[in-house]
Structure formats: structure tokens, C-alpha cells
Length: 224
Image 1 (cartoon, rainbow, N blue to C red):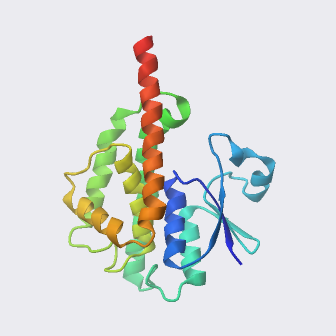
Image 2: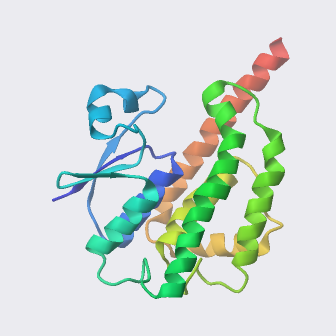
């Protein structure tokens, strides 16, 4: 039975789940949610998910949201082994640490930069750029000598982080000085199954939306 995934392709969290499903060779019944049209606030979706967020997974009546929870659930239920989410205690601890780092540092700081443009019609908060760069620098340091984020093999930490970092790249934030991060990202682009058809178009879409809204705001300022 296919799994229903309510998603938005420009959303990094959704793409991380889709990459994990691809690695597990799972069939997803994709149900696009147009956040700009506030489809997430429709009664039928609110009944499904009162937090009205994407991604939302429905697996044979079981409803789950939060991309990190969904990724670990999919691997636990459908994985042929634990390579995507290692059970070895220290490796799993490092993986969990990166999942928390992604949401608490990267996503939070990046959101403070882009959300004013995307949802409030304002200028980006450029004060957040040094904060984003600091978080990227921490990730760069952690990736020193690493092949994957926590293992020589691709794990869900790579799926989750690459979706975030590629979106940061797509909106035009330069992090080329972080060499370990750039090397890791290049390897992810080449080695993660489904990256080209799943993550790349979505990240590009996110970047285009941000740049279009930013250009529109700048035009308004010029006319004023």
C-alpha cells in the first residue's frame, strides 16, 4: 500500500523525507499542499494534522508529522538494515545531534532571514547572515575528514542536512569559504539517490520564490 505524503516541493523538510523514501525504495502517493493558498488550513487537513504543517505522512491510517520523526520512522519500519539510521550507540548519538543542530541552528537562523521576505513582504533580516554563517562554520568543522555526515555511508542525517544546505545555497547565501561543507555537499549531490530529480528542483524552486519576492519588494522601494 502506498504511503501518502502531504508535501510542498520547495520545503526542505519535505524533500528530506522524499530522499529517505527513495533510498528505501518506497512508493509515495504525493499530495501537494499549496501553502500560499493556505490549503494547510482547510478543515480536512486540520483534521488530519492539527499543527497544519508539512510534511505529513499517512501510513495505513497512522499519521505522523515532523520530517525527522518521519525519516526515522520510515527507516525503522521499512529499512532492510540500519545503514540509513545506525543503531551503534555513538554513531546514532552523533546522528541525533546533527538532527537537533539542523532544526535548532541552521533552520531557525535561516528562517529568520528568509521568512520576512516569503511571508511578510519585508526585507530580509541581514543581521541573520553572520548567524547563519556561524552555524555553517560549525557544520564545516564537524565535517572535517568526514565522508558522510556521520558515516562513510549515506544516512538520514545527510538527507536532512543536504535539503537544508542546498536551499541556503539556492537563495544565494555564499558559503564557499567553508571547504569541508562544500566538499560534502558536492559528494551528496553525486551520491544521494534521487538528489537530481527530487532535491535539486525543489531547492531551485525555493531559491526562485525567494528571489522573486525580494525583487518585487525592491521594486516597490524604488517606486516609493
